[in-house]
Image (cartoon, rainbow, N blue to C red; front, side, top):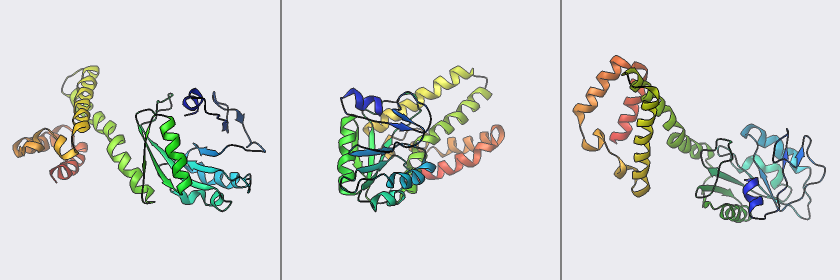
Length: 238
């Protein structure tokens, strides 16, 4: 985020607890803090403590907008700053961020909070080339769980499928490539249709004979996957 904002000429000043390539300040919090918007990109467990410490530095005459980026937390964690007059909110980049200089353009940012915080979040997203959507409720756990269910578990399922392919005598590199291509095909379908309409395979065809054969095969070859398959099968059937 820092690199991209500086690339468009936005004035950015950063603080980090430990040394990092983009950090202007390292170690203790600076004695004076400036900036119209404070963006907290620390780990989820550190947000509450940082909010308490930052609240001590707020200028009552010019309180900033404060946004945190923790998808599983709501705005209540920023209450110490809200009491000091800050407009508080959540600005969560809904992206599989790996820490390798991820590009947030053409992605989505999800916001929650006070009106001024939403305005700042929308402007930040636009500056980064991302789309912005407001989340209407503060049920952060359900929102974050939906993201994990839809994205993180894809890697888990790919690992299970790859292991099964390898067990059938297919080389690991080929197994990974085959299933990666299959997953990408599903994603292409999802770009043009709702999930129920993008579905392919035996469940979309109501091929119960094939599904039964899968259960028998998993009982024999991968019993640890059977419970997952059955649970996903029931959800897919719905």
